Image (cartoon, rainbow, N blue to C red; front, side, top):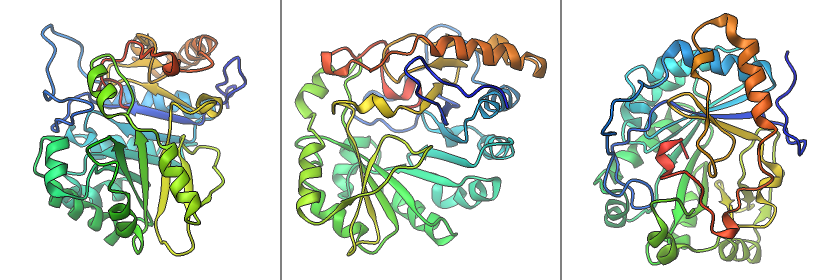
Amino acid sequence: MAQQFEDKFHRKFYYLRLSVTDVCNFRCTYCLPDGYQPPGRKRPAFLTLEEIKRVVTAFADCGTSKVRITGGEPSLRKDFPQIIEAVANTQGIRKVATTTNGYRMAKQVATWREAGLTHINVSVDSLDPRMFHQITGENKFFDVMAGIDRALEIGYPQVKVNVVLMKDRNAKQLPEFLQWIKDRPIQLRFIELMQTGEMDELFNNHHVSGVEIRNQLIANGWILKAKGESDGPAQVFVHADYQGEIGLIMPYEKNFCESCNRLRVSAMGKLHLCLFGEQGVDLRDLLQHDSQENALIERIQTQLQNKSVSHFLHDGNSGMTPNLASIGG
């Protein structure tokens, strides 16, 4: 194995978030309220299956053990099962996850599991079908619920459900969410609304801190769970009376970035050291041949020395990221 990917702050990177498309068929208010807008100018195609194999192999050879396939909506790619299979068959990769809006899960999740998908995150921002429609722009609540049920039915031990917290929208629905996971193996992940370049007004109107929910959980007997090496940034809480779990992702909390263990590659083949902050470093010229792996690893390792200690969201700096779909959230 090549040298472990590590930055100048001695953070090691076990987790790759790999976007395979920036296209999405939902119109979530906090991400793509006007729907997906194709670029006006001609641009390169998304990473090919062969390019995906090469970038994942390079990361695996440098200590990465978990890959999350993201979008946009990754299942919009017709070769999504083949992408899963390629990632799962890469030596050193132990976890293959995806984040999906869930609209195709009921029909396709069995195929994904067979291809090697080990973990699933589904975005469900409300358990009220009308509020779900209002937030996502799509009347697909019952389709998504059927997809979650199907995933559990075919043998996934747990499904993670992502909820973006928004004041005056879903922040007061904690009791309903807790009731939902009482007898279901679901890790409910409350994510603080994050400020991006196109969402300043929405952020100012709807941001709510996850600390309030954490305080409620602790007061009601929920206990913080230890974090694994390749786990994401969630603080996970468990309770003896609940089959489900609660995860809190609070990027505005002090020291959030200290445990950063993940890097991002966009659907266009750009390395992003952070969800926020910079334009990205092009890797695509080094993804054309297997023989380029050493040069690819060297470029990534060199760029890692430029990774900042923090995302600087606390300073109101949302960086260059226009929306979360653009590099896979």
